[in-house]
Structures are given as C-alpha cells and as structure tokens.
Image 1 (tube, one colour):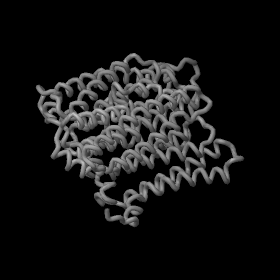
Image 2: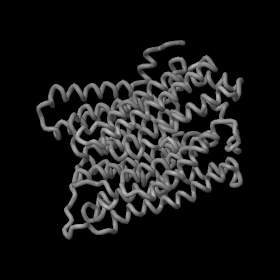
Image 3: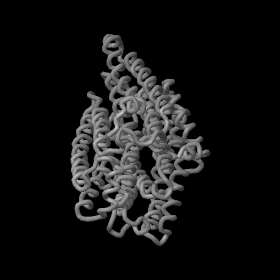
Image 4: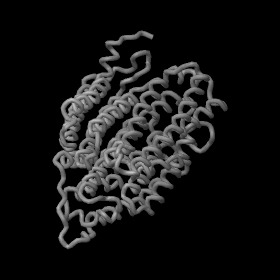
Length: 489
C-alpha cells in the first residue's frame, strides 16, 4: 500500500477539525466555565461547537473529490462529499435545537459528544474498507448511546440509552460476524477487491449467511421493521437534541455506508432487481424489510398519542421508503437517495426543534399538548406545519419530490406487475394512510384552541428561531429546485 500521510491528513481535514473541536470545547469549559451558570456554559459550548462545524464544512468543500486513497481504505466521491456536508449541516441544526432545549448538566461534554458523533458520520461517508466502516460506525454509535442517556435527571433518558445500547451491541455483533465471514470468503477488506472476488465466486450458502448477518445490522441501524423496537423508546426518552441527531444525521450516514457496502462491495450478490422476491440476492431482503417497515410504521403511527413516538413510527415508515432508494441506486445513482435522506433529516430535526422549545415552556409529550400553538407562537406553528407537510410528501415541498422520484424509479425497474411494482403501490397507499396521523398533528397545532382562555406566548431563543427558519427555507427551496442538490451528482 502506497502510504502518503500528507494526502491522508489533507483528505481527512474535516474529521481532524471535528475531533480537535470536541477536545477544545471540553478544555474551554474546564478552564473558563466551571464556576459559571449552566446557561452561560451551554451558550459558550454551542458557539464553539457551531464554529467547529462551520470550519469542518468549509474544509470538506475545499478538499473536493479525490477518489480512493490510502490503499482504497477511503473514497471521496460525490456521494461521500455530499454526505459529509449533509451530516455537518444536520449536526449544526442539532446544535440549534439544543439552544432551545432545557439546559442539562455538563453541557460541554454534551456538545463534544455531538462533535464526536459527527466525526463518526463523516468517516462512515468515506469508508471503503470493512475495518474503517466498522470503526467509524462504532464511534458514531457509542456517541449516540451516551447522548440518548445523557439527561441524568430523567429515568426515561436512562431507559432510552440502555435499550439503545443493548440492542445496538447485539446488532454490532451481527455486523462483525458478517464482516468476518466476508473476509474469510474473500481474504480482502477493501470493498473494490471484495467485489472482484465475489464476482467470480457468486452466491453460495456462506455468502448468503454473511448477507443475513449484515442485513440484520442494517435493519437495526436504519430502524427498519422488525428490528425497530428500540426506536420509539429512544425517540421518547432521549434528550430532544439527541433524538434529532439520531433521527437525521445518523440515518443519512448509515444509509450512505450500507449503500456503498451493498452496491460497490456486494453488488455481485444483489440478485435480479426486476424479480426482487425471487431468492438469490440481498435485494430480496431489502425489499422485504422495506415492505415490513412501511406497513408496521404507518399502521402503528395511527394509534400513537405521544408526539415523539409518532415521529418514531413515522421514521420507521420512512426507513422503508429509503430502502426503495437503496434498491434504485443502481439505476439512478445515489443522488435521489441522498436528496431524500437529507431533506427528511432537515424536516425531522426541525420538528424536534419545535418540540424542544415547547418542552422548555411547559412540556410537550402528547399530541394534544400542541393545542393552540398558532396563537402561542405563530413561528413554531408555521415551521412545524412545513416540516410535517414535507414528511407527509405534500407538494411543492422537498418530501414530495423525494418520494415521487423513488416511486417512479421502482416502477421503471420491473413495471407495475412486478414485485417491485407491487411494493411501490403499497408504499403509495400507505403514504395516503400517513396523511391521517400527520394531519392530526397539524389540527392540534393550527386549529384546536388552547385550554386556557389567555394563552401564554412562547419565547423562542434567537438561535433556535434562526435554525427553524433556515430548515424551513431549505425544505421549500429544495422542493422547488431539487436540481440544487441533484446536479452535484
């Protein structure tokens, strides 16, 4: 392997900046902030974290696409660069959500964990090697486990962190076993060389077992049914900014990693995409996971009265749609998948930003707690409406274009009469079902009156207001001009 550490340091500038920034946040708080009020320490930590993320984003832009490097362990193509920038933007939105949330103890450590998680996300985007993929995934996952259980004053947060950790550790064991089988079959760790060996070997019982192991881990990381049981508890119990990061940047990085693993690495074992339910490839598993996620996510969301749990089951349903993007990546490239993941992440992070402000001003657990929001804060009500309508796929918002593109591509693969066509029709029908529970949320926020005769006005911190407005502008702008993202690919 031709090793150029100068090239490696140049290519990994964003990761170096993020890791150094996390250490700087903790050091600054330790030296200057220990005897100051928590609110002041949080503001200083968020400011340093935001500066770190902006610097990392600028560095990722200037690095540019350089292809594979360091013995093909990393790759910086358009997909990796877009995901890098996307997770940094979503992490920046998460810091804006944290500015409006209730102040917790140890704010510097909390911001540092967000930066470490973002470091893992950016490495996942560039990983082209099994060991790098595993190490980056675990860096992100361990940070998310801690973020989920960070609120020491709430038993729900501890429960969310524990469940997330235990099931995540189980999924990690499946993933590592699958990776070990792949290495044992091929003798290679770099994805291009694995692909070359598998192209000659083809499908057999051992590769099939490896695929099952990897797909179980994929299902957990994507919160896809039937591996979704951790998601409602994690979304409900985790601190609001943690839930926003888990629901947005984590999904973008995870789907990027597994799409690269499945298509460039294990593409020889994909099977026939036009007959997806015929045994013989991982597309069969992806299609089955997508169908189960769409069905369970949408139907279970209908019965929810807790707003966070509703967003969790909505996320499970959206994971099913995202898996359609994984299937169609061979046909249209990764652009449509990235577009959907990024815009979904913006809408979800924005929705949690609204929840964060409401929790700081009296609580927001049940959907009925949104009653009278339009009178208490037109800003929160208006932005929440945009985010919810985008998640529902209402034109001309970004969520509509993302779903429409996936459905059209799936029909192009095998037509309406094919298994992929049947799955597409199911997804369209269940998208109509999802309108009901999304409209229930909007009815409470925009129509229902407040319980008190004199509703109290809600103060929205400036940083959170700017975050919500920026997210709204992105949802509307990318919905009207999707080519702003897609031309990058």
